[in-house]
View 1 (tube, rainbow, N blue to C red):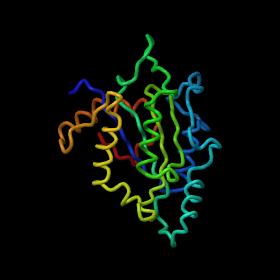
View 2: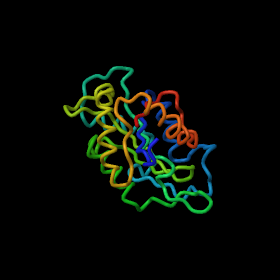
View 3: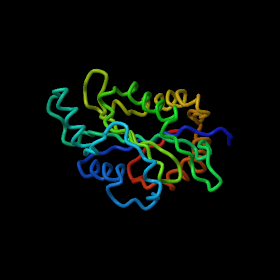
View 4: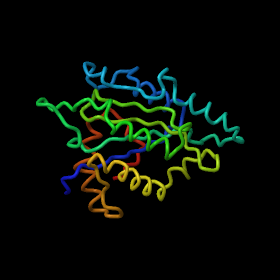
Length: 214
């Protein structure tokens, strides 16, 4: 395996009000989070949703602004995107604690990438967590297409996701991160087993409906 750290991009569909509520409470630490150290909570930061509003309500307001026609009952209103990197990408102190990244260009470059890619108005939450083992960002996206439709299927299609991961890795290259080898099943499984899964195991996440790209 390469010694260069990987850029990690994970998506999860929030299909219901209940799922969005759970994500809101988790990301803003409004509920108990087993893997989070409360002593490090002050290092977390919200960059957009400062009032800690429910993601479902924020998404519904954005959808209403667009005056979309009647939506399907099972339409995905919000997609949660996890942005992080291999643990070794983050400088650590003697105790293994990652250094504070709140004021680094890595955070700002992630925010810029998401807003440019999906539209500033469609990124309704952007939360940095540093109270777990590896710094990571939860970005919340209302999946609006370029022609103004609500369509998770189109915004996050398999082909779009592959290109998105390539573009994300390119944006993160300045931070010493790389993309996995495209279409290499063996490489993907190796990276997932040795890099991605250990990162996710250190985070308190619902992995029942996720897609991982590397």
